[in-house]
Image 1 (cartoon, rainbow, N blue to C red):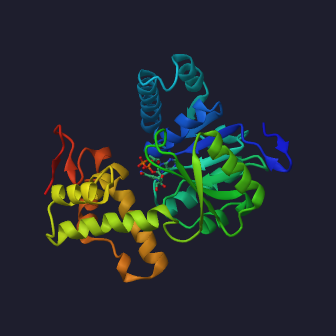
Image 2 (tube, rainbow, N blue to C red):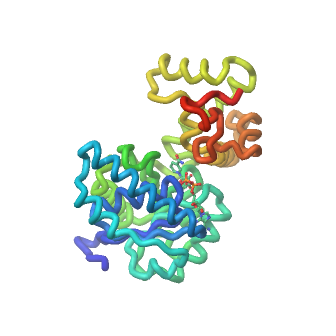
Length: 299
Ligand code: NAD
């Protein structure tokens, strides 16, 4: 059910499409904030894994005395999973967090929209794809917005909010208020490729891959140099493994295409890692091999 306060729709329930690393994080923080959460994925296995991951991450938060066992139980009880968009019939806001491929997202919105109630809002957690273009593929571009969470969602404070050209003020206000309710701080970006965070971050990761490709430094040297030389908690290659190399490449391709500027061309070595299926932590191997503890560089 959604209530109207001063013309701004309030959000009591969220739907999440895509139960991967971002989807499960968004479900985690939403349920802890008391929202009902319906998760949909094409993969039953991904849904089961997401619920397990959420429970494990909440257990860790209990261990750190950030939440109580009662809060965990109440939150887990608010989460349901399904492979059917019909579970979004009463949802106030659906947040799409599926694979970073524009055709996949367009296909999702085409299937999703007929299931939504008229006032429902739709957000995409896309890292780089045009919010205006995604919104135009729905029946409600004025109630479509970018809600870009950072990874890992329960830990990272920022939500970047991106207004498409058609996004209306009520949607912006409602989604910004929701982000704050989830305990986040927001930054607002205009709808240009990569928005703010990835326009700056992913070209840096791509440049680190070039430095490796050209032999400027090896994996450890590049990460150590950037960690200790620029005071970053993770080196760029370690961070790329954490984000997912497929996601990094997809973002770079969007920025390259969207800006039509060769300075953003994806590094061939990054492409090769993705072709090998070495996507980072999620596949056990990327710039580092996670089968060993501590992880060892793959070059
Ligand atoms: P992921 O690969 O971990 O998960 C993607 C999930 O989407 C998978 O479970 C997959 O089964 C599901 N999926 C694919 N096609 C689907 C469909 N048609 N319908 C329903 N589910 C479908 O990816 P992720 O890292 O969670 O990224 C998801 C989104 O979040 C992407 O748009 C990405 O750009 C964005 N994002 C990622 C990060 C990051 O650090 N990984 C940070 C911010 C935003």
